[in-house]
Length: 310
Image 1 (spheres, rainbow, N blue to C red):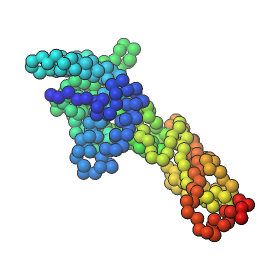
Image 2: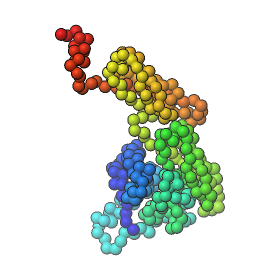
Image 3: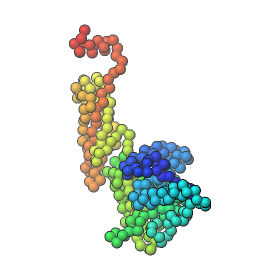
Image 4: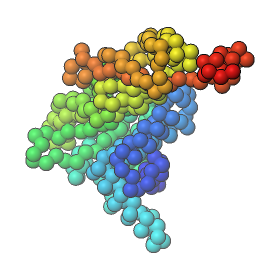
């Protein structure tokens, strides 16, 4: 079995912060997502590898265990000791310190059949052969009434705006998990008593949502921010411009004398409040005035006249 360098897969330093890891994951997941790479097997495998790395490095307990394993593996390489690395020392087995749960194929979460995690992940982090995708979680403490299992899934900003679903299969039962409109990164969707533990009890499955960035749109809480280009003549004389929103294009009236960088508010065009979907944030549109690079002689003469020059 080969060692997998999850930090190298995500392109981050071993001391990378949670935010750095998340940004790297989002960038790579967007690049290699199956929807953007149809019938591209290498991209599909890369996407699976990226998600596996993020499953480990985004979880403090799994990351700590992985770092300890990495140090041990590096020391073994440096020693040049005969024989292979002792993977059995790091493997987890049923009834040990980790609890395992079968959650079906990772493709159910990311919109395509991407197969199981690697042998390395299953062996080190609690997967058992022929179980499908196994997600290990630490055994609960006495303060927790019942064990909970987490799984991360990515959704687009559009899906977060409208609400969406993900298919999850647990203990042979298939569920459609509804992710509510207004979800943001860190939103948790809990499936009560959805999984069975090795000791026969029921536990909750928690879907941890990660909302991907959308090109051209910035989100701050429930408000959205974007930019629209306006030609010089519309900015000076006034007019209309079409502005994209998550609910479709709207027409924004540009008053005469609009200044570069001026911002307009589209009330109610932001994200729905997750606890009160009938209320929405706003969308703020910043005007970027395009200055013409080439002018006709007549246009130049008019500008000269406006400037009071002969």
